[in-house]
Amino acid sequence: MRCSISSESPIRILVVDDEPAIRSILRSGLEKEGYEVSEAGNKAEFLRCLETAPIDLITLDLDLGGENGLQLAREVRAQHNIPIIMITGKADAFDRVAGLEQGADDYIVKPFHIREVLMRACSVLRRYELESIAEDVGNSVSVPVERYKFDGSKLDIPRRELKTANGETIDLTDAEFDLLLIFLRQPARILSRDELMRLLNGRDWSPEDRTIDGHIARLRRKIDSRSEMPRLIKSVRGVGYVFTGDVERLGISETTPS
Image (tube, rainbow, N blue to C red):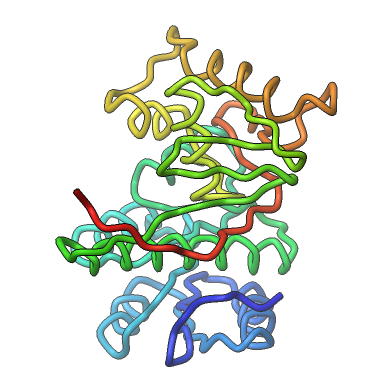
């Protein structure tokens, strides 16, 4: 699966894991898709690779022979704007949430399928590219207009409008619209309730707060009406939610701010 990133130079991925066999699997799969891959088996090698050449994405194990992957993620986040995907054997919900809270953009549990890694990497790289485009636009006269397509429906951000394949409008509340947009911008990425609450309302989530779950339940009924079971937004037990549908970012048009 090729990743449609508009980069003139090859995308460089740093694979950080203390198991040579895991590094080999990841390197082989990533290089077959045209990525340039560097490897690090410990913190010293990891930091040396960061200083040697520009890195576009990092895959990082939580446990590097006793070294703390969460601490490494914090250090990277403090100095670099590089996407991080945790690839680890720790499947506990606490570890998953901790990884996301410490700066990871996604979290994959071993054993993994290389196609899942490729899909997640592509999704994260696309999101960072879009954020970079938005920053570059800054205060220019024209700004890109986002539109997304999924499961036959189209979401028009400027009009705040969701239409089905046959042209019918699906009425969404402001919270439902914003929540759907969060998912479409980060498909296949597991989003914790904390992240969703902060992105939606600018505050932290508490276990007693069922706001997010209520919004998602209502959103599911509106966009997943053809199925009794959730197809597009799936629950990740003890963590949060993930949008599993195929998302297509439609051609960008431009508008001039008033």
